[in-house]
Length: 88
Image 1: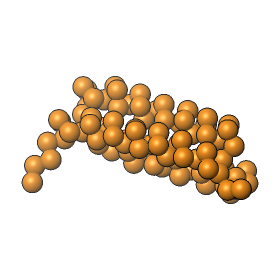
Image 2 (image 1 turned 60 degrees about the vertical axis):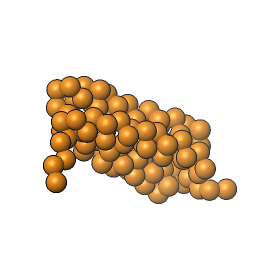
Image 3 (image 1 turned 135 degrees about the horizontal axis):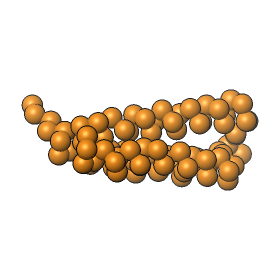
C-alpha cells in the first residue's frame, strides 16, 4: 500500500488542526473561559507548522495531529490536576 504522503500529508495535518480546534472548543464544558482561550491559542503552533510544511516538507504534516493531541492533553492535565478545573 502506497500512502503518498507528499499529497495527503498536508491534508492530514489540516484535518488534525480542525480536530484540535474542536477539542479546544469542547473544553468549555469543564474549563473556565481563560482555559478555553489558552487551548485555542495552543492551536497556533501546529497551524503555523502545517502552513509552512505543506510545500516544503509535506510528509511531516501527517505527524502534526499527534503534536496537537499532546498539547491538548498536557493543558488538560495541568488544568484538571493543578488548577482544579471541574465539570459543574
